[in-house]
Picture 1 (cartoon, rainbow, N blue to C red):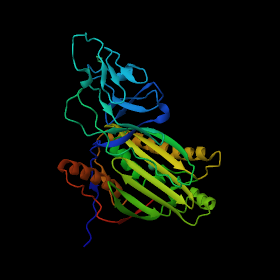
Picture 2: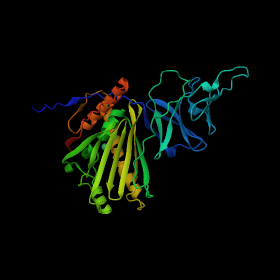
Picture 3: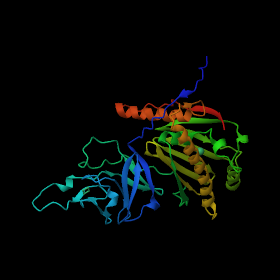
Picture 4: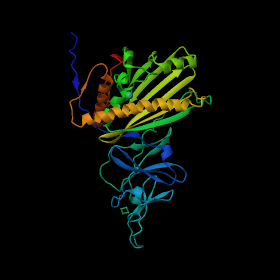
Amino acid sequence: MPELDSPQRQAPDSLMLTGFWYRALPADHVHRNQLHQATLLEIPLVIGRDRQGKTFALRDACPHRGMPLHCGKFDGENLECSYHGWQFDAHNGQCQLIPSLTADQNLKVDRIYAGSYPCEEQDGFVWVYIPDPAPQSAGFTMREEAPDPAPQIEKFGETSGGQYKLAYLTADMPVSIDHGIIGLMDPAHGPFVHQAWWWRSRHSIHEKKKNFEPIPNGFRMSAHTPSSNSAPYKLLRLYASADSITTTIDFVLPNLRKEIIRAGKYWFSSLTTVTPITRNHCRIDVVAAWNIFRWMPFGPDLLKFVFAKFVEQDRRTMELQAEGLRHNPHLMLIDDADRPAKWYFQLKAAHVEAKRTGAEMKHPLAGPVTLKWRS
Ligand code: FES
Ligand SMILES: [Fe+2]
């Protein structure tokens, strides 16, 4: 007998996962020898670029008496706190100088550290690795290194000297990380939120069937031919003179959505992240790379325009949703349209559990699954 379908009550816990890389700032906002503030997972950061152009990230609080370090001076190498002038190496946070010490006072200055985080520049963004919280020994711990490099956008044809364009878009969302992410993977809001004459209207709603499969730390919407009723895809098919256009969409913990569209020798690849800033606030960053329309002067602008519209529609929706969420309503997730959202919560719980027990993570998807919905 089939199981009775009842909507599942679900309360997002807004837990912000540590032990991952997060996008902090667009790289073109971070200038040489300047200090910038950023917040990730409620951690205040000061981010900068040294004399050589290499980026760094320190906790924006002096280990002496907590003064924000972004108020200090930076000479391109060391950061000087504005309160008592202690100096720290920008890259590893090690204390270099305490001006108040007299010649006969032998405090071991080099054992003091400002909190410091692994920092990398990748595809136009400064990424910061947020480690699992260390046992409290503030001020005397060296930083933890990241086990892997920061995530990259997948690009194709680079070995044959392939060229591509890169662009980014960013938008603040006044909702928790969980609402930001499930809003991103939600297939049912499209016809209502993203209406446009050149895209689709609510009259174009029809039944869809998509195959999903488990991948490490996430799930994949398997390669499929995108909805044929949308103008951009018709255009693309014509332009690439390719018979098949395939799209793959991956979601990977903690917050990565990778989309790859391939049509013959042309490709479009994006990496979207939803970054927890505070418990009630996240930011969405879309970075895209492509070799389609590369030779057309208005190509990138057109793409940026289309994406900006989408992201703005999502941002506005979440802004309104935040008003409703303020009153702590019951929430529900239904099958099949909200199944990816359920998987997200299950993945998160499995990840946390695996970390707690040290056992291997139990993946919520046992194998390929087909989902159906109307959108
Ligand atoms: S608070 Fe930074 S040097 Fe004292
Ligand atoms: Fe959307």
